[in-house]
Length: 155
Image 1 (spheres, helix red, strand yellow):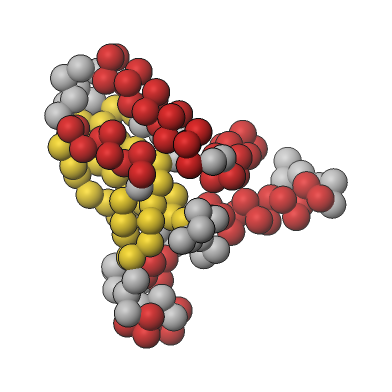
Image 2 (cartoon, rainbow, N blue to C red; image 1 turned 90 degrees about the horizontal axis):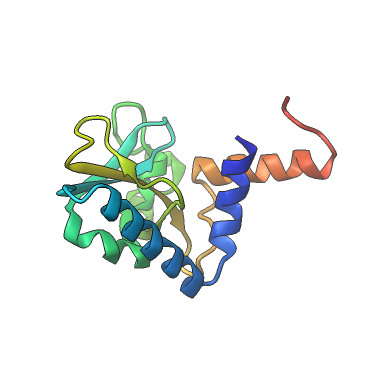
């Protein structure tokens, strides 16, 4: 678990050029291993741990290196998928879209159809590329950093 959090933190801090290059290499390796892939599910985990996403043709996979867009309100949904307006990420803000970039190492075959469908997890970033504050993985990472600074560990 520690490795994933640190990898995500380091990944977001990399320059755009290095990130793009790393993802391009990951895509190349994946498609060499799974040449029959036809679709990719791009997945963003909401506040409730539910995947929100899109299915794209595999030809669009390399374009993900520059990111894709999801509404910030994905982190203000209740368990039924309704936006909780009191969170301040919905209509009040105009339902803004934010850039989402692939999380390194998450391009894998889909359990539903591993021969023809891949999946990749995304993380949301601000306009300047910094982690989006309310995304659960970023909240967890901040808490993890606070524990580390105090010399504590959850295990």
